[in-house]
Structures are given as C-alpha cells and as structure tokens.
Length: 304
Image 1 (cartoon, rainbow, N blue to C red):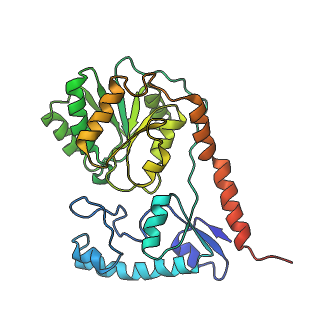
Image 2 (spheres, rainbow, N blue to C red; image 1 turned 30 degrees about the vertical axis):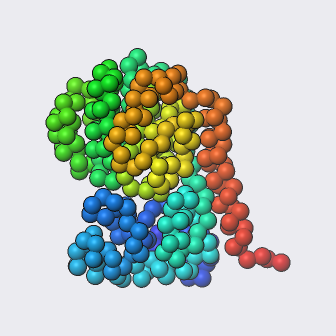
Image 3 (cartoon, rainbow, N blue to C red; image 1 turned 90 degrees about the vertical axis):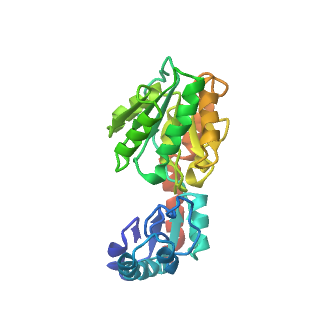
C-alpha cells in the first residue's frame, strides 16, 4: 500500500493498491500554475492547447508527451485519488480525473506567540516572488491605500526571480520608504512577522490548489486578505477570518487594504479566538489523518 508517492515510485509497486494525493496542477498543466501567457486562468485540457496557446515551445511540448502518458497511467491505476480543495477537485474533474477532497492541514505555532499588532497598519506578504503570486497587483493596490493611510506599511517575505522587477516597481510607485523586501525567512521569523501584522495578504492571480499561507495566518489570529479564486477562497470566510476580493483587481484589493488600515474591518487587528479554534479543528492534522485512513480502509481488500 502506498500513499503520497511520486509516479516513478508508484510504478515500482506492481499491483499494490495506492492512494494518489494530488496537491498541484502538474498532472493537468505542464507549467503547474494554469496561467496563460496573458496571465488569465487556463481552462483548456492538457495537450495540443498547451502548444497552441504559446505556453510551451514545440520541443518542450514533444518532451512532455511521454511524461503525460506516464501520469495518465498512474492516475488510472490509483485505487483512490485525493485532491486538496474543491477548486482543485473541480479542475481535475474537467479533465476526467475523479477525486475526493481532503483538506491539508496547518499547525499553530509551538510555543504560541502573543498577538502584538504594530502601532501602525502593517500588511504582510509571504511567498514566492513569481508571476502567479500577484505581488505586482499588491504593490499597486498598496500604493492607493498608502495615499489614504500614509502611515501604512507593507513587508514582503520571500524570494524569487521577480524580486528586482518588483523592487523597481516599488520605486516607480514612490513606495520605497514604506515597502520592505525581507527576503527568505525561517518559520520562526515568519511567526514573528505575523504576530505584528494587521493582516496577511495573498494576492495570487492563479487558483491556488489549497492556500496554506492563509491558514497559517488565521491559526495565529491574523486576518487574511485573499482572492475569490482557488483554494485560498475556501480557507477564508469573508468578514470573519479575512476579506476576499476579485483576483488581480487592484481597485478592490486597495479598498480591502484601506478597510483594514482604517479599522473599518477587524478594528482589533485580530480574529475572534472562538472562530480561530473552529478553523484549527477543521484544518487539523488529526482530521486529515482520520479522513485519509478512512479512504485507506475502503480500498484495502477485506481479509474475511
């Protein structure tokens, strides 16, 4: 019996039944993020559309044909397939892959860190500095917010190939004194950043397969501002554990930033502990394990 294994490892299992966990778009998108060259979300089936849309060069497309035949065999042989959000499950179903949704989990900090919101409005981004993460949208929205709330600040934690272009955009917007690029940080340092933040912002323009970064914030009592897209939208309850905006919409995102910065939303700069506890239960490690075990028991042949 195998769980969470790579395709190459699964091929070595012979006839042993296995559960296949799909936590990204690689089996239906060679680039993994389902974004077309114009940054809109792709809804085409994997195949010739990847070449025609300009996502892949002819050599890359030809190379992937063998890989996708292998992936197709792996998915067909799986005794059960698990996906990590309703959004991902729907995308897989559109391409003929039937799966069951079992949310991933997050963990509270251990030991817990007290909430110590900064004196001034402080927003935090944590993630890769890649095109699909939408940090450019965040910078433009924050520039509008800063005009209304000059004391607002933004800290960007993470690294990626777009860092220098994002720093140039920051300078062109005149935001270099209120936006700080912090680079990669250890989990302990990120916990400290979250303890001071008024809100975490995850402005992804791609449909995240899950959205653990929002959960990490909510578990620590920090509101999360996320797009109404993908798994991130499933982890945040608008007005309760965070705010939701149309993906890649600078204007609406800026309005949500202003709502937090002015105290119109989440005036205490923290979430209701009772709601945090509910989210922790829903996305707990124990519940995840329980659901996976139930699926295992379904597919293991009875010994009677």
